[in-house]
View (cartoon, one colour):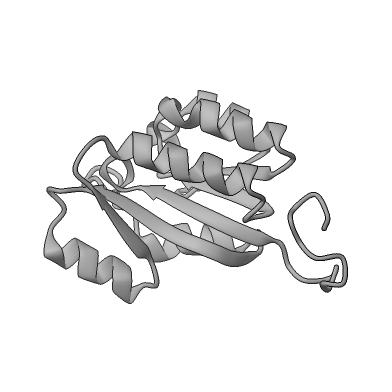
Amino acid sequence: MDLFGRLADEDEDAPPRVALFVDGPNLLREEFDVDLDDVREAASAAGHPATTRLYVDEHATPELIRAAEARGFEVVVTSGDVDVKLAVDLTRFAVEGQADIIAVASRDTDFKPAIETANACGVRTLAIAPGSHGRSDALRNAAAESVTLDE
C-alpha cells in the first residue's frame, strides 16, 4: 500500500479521490445563495468523488434533505453541533487514508485544526468558500488550495 492506502497494483493514473464535507448551516444561508451543484463541481474539479457529504442539524427541512440527496449528497443529520461531527469525520478520512484530497466547504475557522491534521497526514486539502465576503482567511490559508465560489 502507498501513502494513501491504495494497493500498489492500482492504476497510478487514476484521478485522485476527493472527500467533500459541506458545512450546511454555515454555507447554505440566504446571503450566500450557494448552489450545492457548484460546491460539488468545485470539489470534482480536483478529482473523483470518494464521498460527498452535507452536514445539517436537526432543524434542516425535509425539502433541503431531499434536494441534497437528489444531487448525490449523503446527508448527515446531527442532533448536536454540526462542526464536531464534520471535523471528526474529516479527520478520520485523512488519518485512515480514505481520500487523496479532503475538501471542506465552509466559512468556519473551526475546521482549521482538522485541515491541518489532514495536511500533516500527507493529504491534499481544499477549502471551498461561499463567496469573498463569507470566506475564512484562516481556513483558506490552512488548506493547500482554495476556491471561492463567486470568483
